[in-house]
Each structure stands twice: as structure tokens, then as C-alpha cells.
Image 1: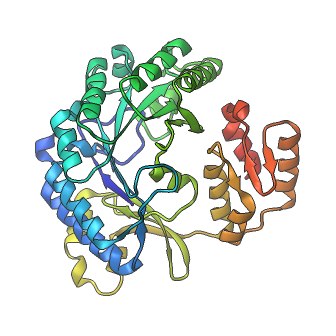
Image 2: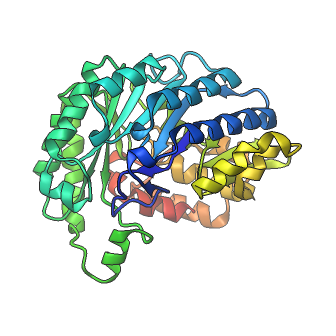
Length: 395
């Protein structure tokens, strides 16, 4: 289950997620929680009994939300759905309950309060440990605040703490990227997400890039940084289990694994996306992206008749078998373990061995860019730098 909290202090220039810049005092903390609790009840009525293996509060900046309101929403989810106990990817019991945090709104007291309401994992958007690079990325914390947030989260007793880093920024050396990753992990992290800076078209960075006014790192430097981070974290005992994610044994993100393995997920809140199996097939939907409209509609859900949760949706699409298979390939091949393609084809009902795909597989295997071990395909680690192109060939 994914819960979207759309408010943040300011929008970062690289961010293409739905976010609403706002002062914390102006956020409708209680009203938004009420709307979510109403949606939870209606999703339960629509979907029936479901087993929840992970809950992720994303944004925006969920650490801006008053913890008691976040806790009310979490209790409503846990009361409405069955829980899957004993995660199969590690020692941690499911459900995994994660809250995304910005260092500027996370300290010891907030981390302890989140732990007290049932959160067992924090994901902290550190992004960089260099003040100049943080200013370039539009972040409203400095490097020391990022380090302090991680230290305080670990000190709070939170069982699992992860952080995000962005590499591949202009003027950053591979050695710097590796050193920042190592410095964070040595604070006590058990998971790190390390992403190359990507320029999305509908962002402030996208607009600057179109005008040729955005400094960008050359591709060889980005590739060198990717390899340097991989080497640094391997030396600390972390497994590179997905192209951008590293974890200690038993500490993989169950929530993200659910996406990469193509599980159904329920999206809750303003602008949230979900993919669920309903009568008639598998559907992707998006909730209304206007916060006031979402809250106003949610407040009257109980009066709207059968399947009222759909009144919250601004769009819904029936996913064809081929689209489902394409998404399985796009996401599953990001994992080091790869994907059982025959099982994926059987589950989606799509034709796997089209003539074009057969030719692509043969070319990629011959070039060493794809491994075929029975029904399982995977991208060998030396080719992870080319993963996007390899996956494109298979689509």
C-alpha cells in the first residue's frame, strides 16, 4: 500500500512527483487524515480481504505531517486489511512500514514518535553531503543536517533506516560519490538507494536543459561514479540487489521489491497511483491530483453508492496482457535476480516469444548483455550500466 502525502516545504528542481509547496502550519493535517481514513474504508469494501506486506508513506514530505495524524491513518490501514507476517526476503516481519523523511523535518523526537505509532523503517532523502551540490539540487538542508538526521534516526532505535543519494551531478568526482555513500552507511544504515541524476521533462531542470543552461556531468563520469559506489558499498558488505539499491543481508526494501516483481498495490491519497485486480482484469488508476478536490470527495464517499472509491479517481485504465508483460520486463530486469519470463507471460496472458523479441534475446545473449538460465532472464552486473538500452531492445 502506498500513501501519498503531497505537501513539502519547497519543490526540488529535479522532482516530477506531485508535490505542493506549503508552510507546515498551513497543511490540513487532520482533514487530510480524515479523507484518507474514508478512502481506506471504501478501498476495503471494493477490494475485499487483502494481505498487506508493506505500507509506504511517500511524498512530498511525509515527515512534515503531524505524527498523530499519520498514526491514525496507519491504524486505519492495519484495522481494515489482513497482515502478511514473516517477509520472505529477510528476517524482518511484514508488513514493512516506511515513512519518507526530509532531513530538515526529521530529528530524534520525530523518529521516536514515528516508531511509537508503528513505523519500522525510515527512508531519508539526504541526496548529497556537499553544501554547494545541495544548493544546486534545491535542497533546503545542508550537509551537516543530513548527517545529523541519519544519526538521530539510528539513535532513536528505529529498526531499519535507509537513505537516498544522487550522484552524477556536474563537477562531482567518482571518488566523492563513493566517499559519500561510504560515510552514510558507516553511520549505521542497513540500506542505501543511490541514483544517477535524471532530468525529467516536466521539471525546472528539464526546462533549463532544453535551453542548454543546465550543467550536466558527461556520461563516462556518471558511469565511473556508478562503479565507484558499487565497489565502496560491496567492501562494506552491502548487496547490490537492484540497479540503484544496496542492502545488508535481510534488509532489502520489501515495498520496492513488490513493485519490481509486479505485485498489486493500492494507492491512497491525493494523486496516488495504484494497480489492482478487479472484476474484468487488472487496472491502473490515479486519484484526483488536486488536494482540496480529493479531500472534499473523500469526505462524502459513504453516500455515493456501490464502489464509491472510484469516485476519487481521475483516471483508470485496463492493462492489456502485452502492457503487463512489458512492465514485468521493465521492472523485473532491474533486479540482480532477474525475472522468470515464462511465469510472467503465463500470469499476464501475453505472448512472450514474438519474432522480434526472439531476435532481440538472441542478439543480447550473444553480446553478453543478457543471461538466459532456463526461464529466467537477468542482466549481468557488468552490463547494468546499459540496462535501459537492453530493456528497450526487449520491448
